[in-house]
Image (tube, rainbow, N blue to C red; front, side, top):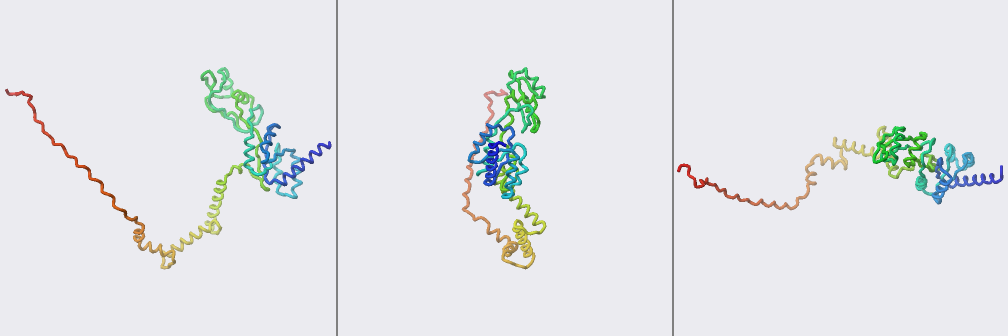
Length: 314
């Protein structure tokens, strides 16, 4: 082995060893379809927030195994080192680093033979294609019409499903429509945090989501404790309230008294006394509404028949 290669391996070994010792949070990321220039831009964006380290999987496993004696929690990383992966060592804010990785994804055209990382839907509307190209859309079973001298797609078309291989016709159509359906960058596969591994979807949880889950868990524990009669911290308040209600019911049904029951008994014996206490105080009586004005009727004048100066009998 050339001396230069041996020195590079030793430097890489020491660097990865130091990063594993000094960082407790790591993002394991897939780097498929990420070029060298793109990788440099990502490194620049992460500067001061995280350290991105790629390398051969065999070397990474070797370094991790050498650290298991000092830090046994690193063993959960070994199954995750498969394929084209790299490590992003978090300096301070994990969510901020994830945001940088998302912002540094770049659009890419669909290439024939590539595996689609996501679904591709061609939207309805004008395409800018000449009317002579309708046969191309018909070959793909895409309904279309001619409108204002150009081809128009009638309905949204689910062209490619995630995981399918991109065909020549689909790639050509997307190129004609100037659609770049895919985006590539570092994809977070798993999250390592103080010896624990979990799915990256956990990073989407907010404080309110965590509190809601906690409240739901406490409610479940209280329900189970009450159902089986096993006291827990969560069920104890409910047990005390239920016990108080039972003692109060016995006191009301018997002559046994205790201070808290006396008021309830007094209320049951004379509820009107308590009702009078809550009647609102009477305020000044409202002024009477003014009487409606008396409308005088106009006298009705009876009209006499007028003979207009004509006498029927002479």
